[in-house]
Length: 302
Image: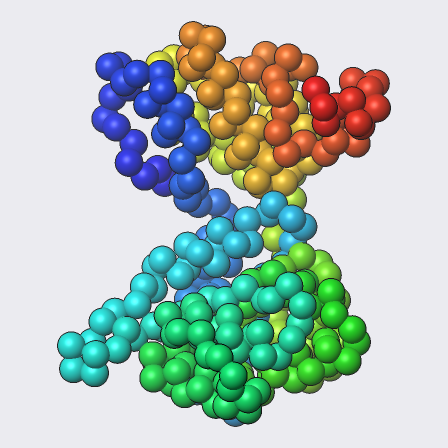
């Protein structure tokens, strides 16, 4: 789905079209739709003693954070004239750079718009965080970048995992974690938590019908004045090889090629749009250096 796409690009200036290409937007695909459906199912789950939890994991760039933010936008806070409180069904926070229990509560409170506490005890901050989550009517907590907990010591990890398990038990709401495969490994170290978590793996794209559908979506929304051909066998193979099937790389590669097509006046994308003359973003530096026969250091400085 595109956002803000003008009806016609016939009179749009090149810089206007480039600005549209660079803008962040949501494009749905099969895996993201399945993850969102699973989140919707959890949101309506009735309270119980052992709430089900979900881990969304995959390698960097597979779209975990975009899925989380899309779900958050779909369930925005609603201000209550009666209570004077923003009711917030979905509370999203990023796991702190070091797995410290106090920082977890502070991240959650910040995501609810609460002012920072100064000088409070850990127990006090924990109680206030729990109280706020109840006050805003939280029905789900989502913790992004959970793999960050591995930056701490084993003891810090155990305390942190105990803290998030306590919140899920105490509030009787689903807990969702998102991160890389390291996040899955981290959760597996806590047998009680691991038993509750369903794992949803965002897998890299294969050069198949689903991938063809994604490229067709780009063909429909890109602000180019000529029809593109991203689904020829050669174009699909080049795009897949250059990006290793990683969603963020695919998006950035096509956006860069589209911008180049606008600037050059070509106004369409095809297999030739992804040749060696294109500055390839978010493509593995190791892969690029092997393909061109240059040292990695030279590629970075190119």
